[in-house]
Image: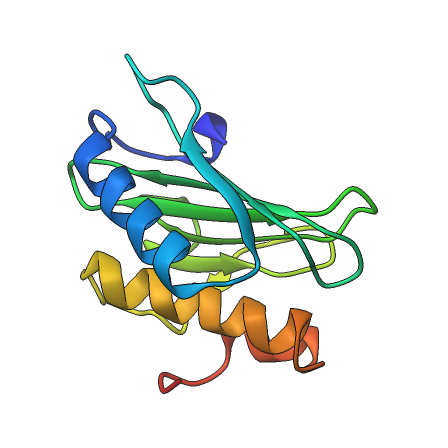
Length: 146
């Protein structure tokens, strides 16, 4: 991931990671666990789900003090996608790496949104619609409304 960032993003914001954790634990019933990777020097929030698109998966979330972020979802069978907002060559700062393999970046439906609660809810709502309601993978990065 670090090689994907084409500019400075600064330190990780551990307070924001805890706020994201609280949103997910309180609002998404399929969250099995959510904890930072290192309580002293966290680099990401790791969220484990009891269900997934094909199999139970996990989301690794990083939020930097600069307001840049990464929501990276993976499953053991290879489904992989990511919502990012950070400097990246040949892509807008807010971009999406689509499944099944988090391929080349495309503009993100999140655009210039900066509020962590809005971004977190939008990402998890789209994941939930696919994992639980059977929506298509193509709907992950479509539209601005939930």
